[in-house]
Length: 263
Figure 1 (tube, rainbow, N blue to C red):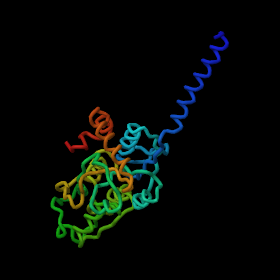
Figure 2 (tube, rainbow, N blue to C red; figure 1 turned 45 degrees about the horizontal axis):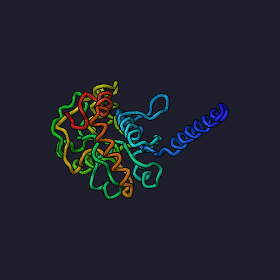
Figure 3 (cartoon, rainbow, N blue to C red; figure 1 turned 180 degrees about the vertical axis):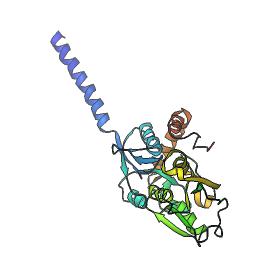
Figure 4 (tube, rainbow, N blue to C red; figure 1 turned 90 degrees about the vertical axis):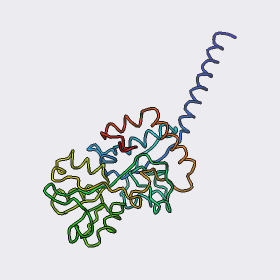
């Protein structure tokens, strides 16, 4: 074979190799990750307009582990399950409690963190027990469409329960003195009272709310019920990032405890 022939053959081989790599990349699975974008520190919109937070980082890492490229889609909470069912995105990672009621509509992965709910009150409040009698005629706030809202409505029927489109709006009314009590997910509310200027108004009060009827079996990733293969792949990837320390590295950027074990 002449030098020119060898050069030509090498060029063809390189082109074939490059073309194969390009085809492989072009065929990489693309998925859409749905989240709320209004639930810091789990999911929120940055000043630059990107969606960030613990949920988002965990979701993108899981995408990487299953070999998928993921686009993040922000969706208002009250439409987040309908959006999944309408195929606006392929899975939801938005701090959603795994409950029997939701299982009627969607499938869930294994929990990617545990959860409890809590109460927030003004710093000067003397409330320590939270019952229908102690909250009678008081103004109680929670985010609409959440298990926290279900809890407030069911447990405090004689209170003036006010529901808000987002947790941020409920927290703003708490800081402004429009609420006597707020019910919410413990970790975001700890973040609110300990790390934000508005949260300086308030404190966590009472025992954590851990009733399985409301907090379910932890917090999971929601998928369409027919997407069992994707669920299994995400479960395997979650186990992998727990084992190799990646989960802990992401966790420690946001929390001082391991939210997977709540310890």
